[in-house]
Amino acid sequence: MNKNTKIILNYLLGAVLFTWLAWSIYNQLLHQPNLKSSLQQMIDTLEHKGVVAMLLVLIGMLVNWGLEARKWQMLIKPLQPMPFLRAFRAILSGVSFSINTPNRIGEYGGRVLYVSNNRSKLKAIAATMVGSFSQLIVTIIFGLTGFIYFVANFTPVRPEQVTGYATWEKISFGVVLIICGLVILLYFRLQIILSIFERIPLLRKARIFVQIIVRYSNADLEHLLLLSALRYVVFSAQYLILLDTLGVEMLWWQGFLMNAVIYLVMAIVPTVAIAELGLRGKVSLYFMGFLSMNSPAIIAATVIIWLVNLVLPAVLGSVLLLGIKIFKEK
Image (tube, rainbow, N blue to C red):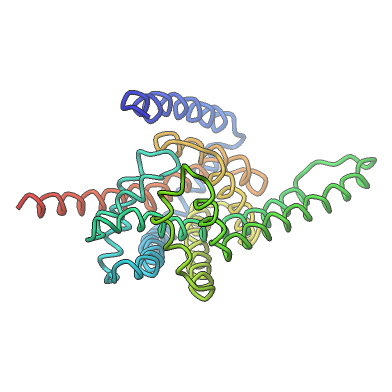
């Protein structure tokens, strides 16, 4: 894309989409029954739990990105051994790059700045994609599990539709298992991707940059999945802690499953950073609304988790990038 197209997509279109979503959320909140009592409940619970909750959420942010740094440290090892702190700085720099790109794909560009060998930078991008693949697998597995729970418990059904609904539920479950199976199979057979590059003439010259993906053993890939699952649990726990602190009453496992559907939707739907908050708020209101009518608290938790897990690391990453620029100039 040329520069003008990027500006239109990232700012103009994104700003319009964000404004529309924000207005929709505002109207939904404005017409919520017992709005004043919900706001008062949120203030009361914040006074009792706010400090401890925010401390836990901030610690969770460090653990969240620390696990991602450990993943990247593993992935980059065949190209360049990297200390954990350097990997952590690379991750934060990647977040600062990603905040203005669709679905945060700019994250790859920020990370490769910490790769010393220029010839290894494109290979590092391929290695990073393996880590993203492992996180996507975890998101899909938990998300589809949550979707099954959602369909089974919150889809309105008339008595005469029960038989058909049960059949549809079984079909959906079967499709879910097939999707999960195929995704996991591809993950543990990454050489399939390399063979595609070798067989397509247009991609053949680039195969040297993706050859690194076949250097990871099944044990490495399993370790990556474990780290991705731990990271998923951490940022899910952050959101559930905030919901509880802001007065949203629900069973934690129900909140976890509904949140899993939200993450699945956010992973599938393409968006730009400026519109992401509005979309995340709208999706959260829809799915969490089946568990609680406390819409103000749901929106507040969504905004706080976005600020803590994305904006704050992006600011820190920008400072680190400034340090790299000054160091190069000297």
